[in-house]
Length: 179
Image (tube, rainbow, N blue to C red; front, side, top):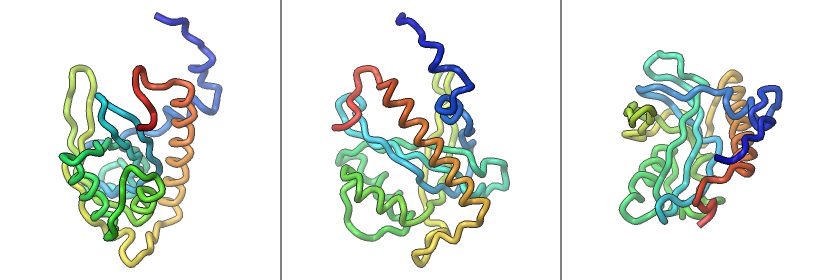
């Protein structure tokens, strides 16, 4: 094992704290708004991970403000997932999810309702989005977020920036960050 640089784990550093300060959503129906994305390769296949913040817990739970990261494989067999997400945001124009600017337009189109289930994988709990549906947020081109929701989005965006800074210093083993 390589030497551990303890400065990277010092909780007094803003960067480390920002990476671990937001909880992940639980199971159920949530309204999710995208706050960032990252391209990389898994098993020689291009993917994009989109980070979301829960702006409303439709089940009345306490997940508002928590995050979810969903990974979309960018190939012909899996294109339906990213297409369902785009439709749920209210997007109706053709787009290429491998082009960052085009994907960002879809992400900014609106929030999506999602059904999330939890699956245990050994000692880890995976969150799977089983379905994306249209939400009332983003209808008519306006998100109409409350001040509290805007604050949640801002915090999640800052968290995402902290994650990207951390990821730049800690690249995935054997993975390319761009295809």
